[in-house]
Length: 253
Image (cartoon, rainbow, N blue to C red; front, side, top):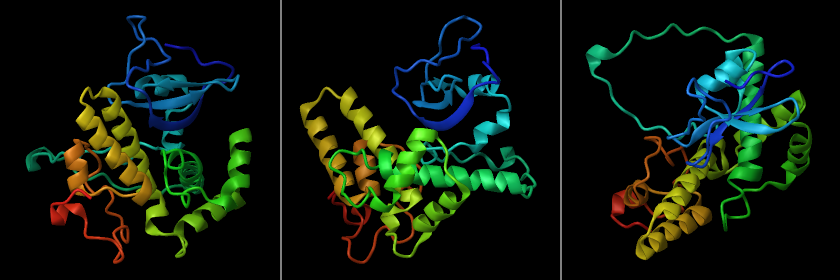
């Protein structure tokens, strides 16, 4: 296991990584394991360099394992629902009211996630519609890039923008997470395909995603993409000005 240095590694985010990425830590075999799911925790060392870690390795590297729950998670919508047998369901856990510090940390993570989604991750989708990147957030995003920090006032401002009635549903956090997740999965499928026709089809879906910031159930199924059961199902995403979702018409576009 990579040893903590000068007070330990700093958790930054949970994110997608290339499928050939290896964990920065070493297991008992002294080998670097991979990431079959394509997800990793990104930790920063005292020198400011970032490295990918598996969950167990990340827990061993940070000062407190609870810190991993306080970082932005960009993989949240990469969830496939699997129903358990009723007899095997565990009893419901008693919800504990978060402390003031935990609530503050959760708000900070949500604000950073929305800031980076809108200004970097969703904005980096090729040919994405220009409304994704939001000029009023440029200054705070540049500051975050330099320092890795945002103030309490900036947290409130970012969350107010995300929740504002003037922010279209397709530009809110959950849908942008769906856009980012589908973008990553489409790029992986394109890179792995040897069929010219299939690559052409996947790229057409990618272009559609970039222009409209949504994919229908039929489009996801045709591409072979597994995502959250409610992917692209946030309230208002399919507005009255849109054609009916492809899942209800049989058409992919």
